[in-house]
Image (cartoon, rainbow, N blue to C red; front, side, top):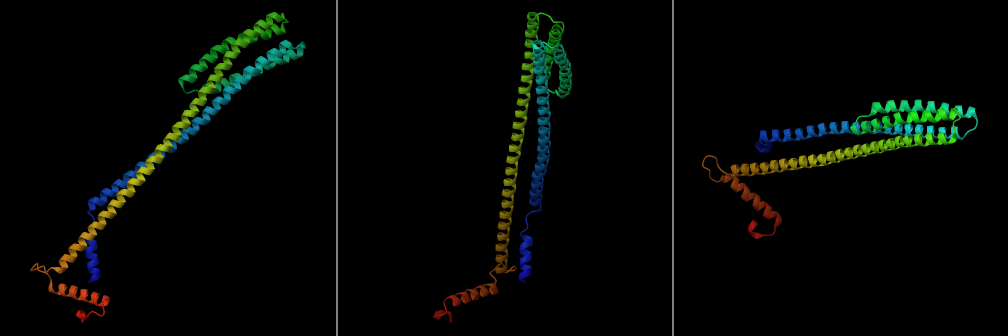
Length: 268
């Protein structure tokens, strides 16, 4: 009898199916949003890493081009300062080798350019290179033809001026790539912070709604228990107090009082 009563109370204490369905859909919706956002964050982080590697390669190529320009200037000065014709020819031959290295780095750098600022700097660099190459060749020709030192110095100054501009442009390109790297890192950190906040808010909402659902279930169960107790004390036909239940409650009260006050005369 007691088991049937407990089953009846549990069956009546069940929440409305629509409420349970709404709660399940809400939790599922939050979980799906979290999964989709996690996938998006993962893709953006991978994209940021790829961008960082790409920019690091650009910086490496720009620095390689700077080194080639500086070495070409150094070899020009060495050739001008040397009195050995074979050493001069060797220094001038190195100019062409460095020029080939510069062009290879420049071609690879061109393929990696993907912003208007980078392309603009590369256009300025190409314009400066078109001016610097004839000036460099002129210095080499003057050295090989044993021109006057004054004339060679004048050509060296002109070549150094243009090459210095190229080095400055490459320095600006390196600074630009570092700024792009900083923005990518900052953007990735911001996305991670947003995802962390979303996860905390989602977890808090799920816990809150779970507590509310548990509280509603508890209150519903208590309400049905009270109703069952009232129904047990009332005769369903006459709606009057059930005599047997009242007597049982009185006897239970007497037994409880007797156990607590064993020597009270009125209980015997």
